[in-house]
Amino acid sequence: MPMDGWGIMQQATELARRGEPFALATVVWRQGPSSSQQGAKALITADGELQGWIGGACAEPTVIREAREVMQTGTARLLLLGDPEQFGYPAHGAGEPGELPNGMTFVPIACQSEGALEVYIEPVLPVPHLVVVGGSPMATTLADLGRALGWQVDLIAGQDFTADDASERSLVVVATQGHDDESVLEHAVAARPAYLGLVGSHKRGDAVLGYLADRGADRETLARVRVPAGLDLGHTGHREIAVAILAELVQVTAAREPGPRALRPDRRAAPATDPVCGMAVDPAPGTRSSRRDGQIYYFCSAGCQDIFEKRLLTHE
Image: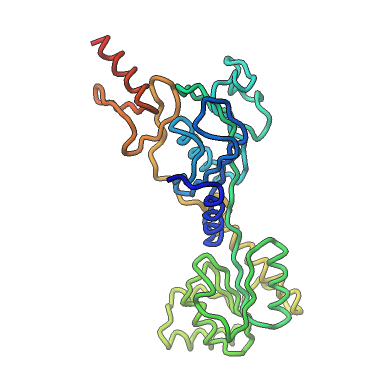
């Protein structure tokens, strides 16, 4: 059963909490007959799963395809679905470069209902999750800088930190400065974060890492611990150290999680074209199809499939 608008927003909140990218699609205009309604919403995941209701078989595959492109580019767009003349554009000029304002995309569909839709698709991409462990002025400054960038930031006292406070997408900076560094870093290693740094000297870092290695900590993760955390700016104060660490974190996120390009690759089959109406069709299991002379043809509806097969019978 399709989710209503409230259910979509609840699901969006959960995906954002887990740091998963997705796109929100909203019907901003419709011309009947159409199975969708103005204001209808749908959520499209990075894997191409659509939750909610944005329209029938004519609109859904196109919205999914465009939503995945929006997530890849990180740029929202207004999607026009229908016949070009329904939007005030001559049929012979539709789709030509410069025809539409920037940010608008026209996709012709020849749905038998003869309806039309305008769908606004916006990407919702995860922000870095920074976990700063410690209570020093440097730790507080680093947390404030992370929030200024719009990151999700948790500032946690060393005695309160556990592996559950971080995940594989987290950036963890241990700034306990000698207060039970070993225990805190052991918890951080268990979380296997995307980045793990220890604030301290090389000598102190070697001692802590050696202790954890003797206790059986994962050596691969230990080898990735940055000690000292941050870019080397020479002898600096706590504010500059915070800036140096943040600069390294920005560098890491740009290399490891480059925004939209971090999305998982699309393993779905490329869209097919309905030979009758010309609309894009997702060639997934269950899609209406006919095999002729070794080639498979996919259809958006039973009507198009019936027309196609009757044409073949006529010529046989």
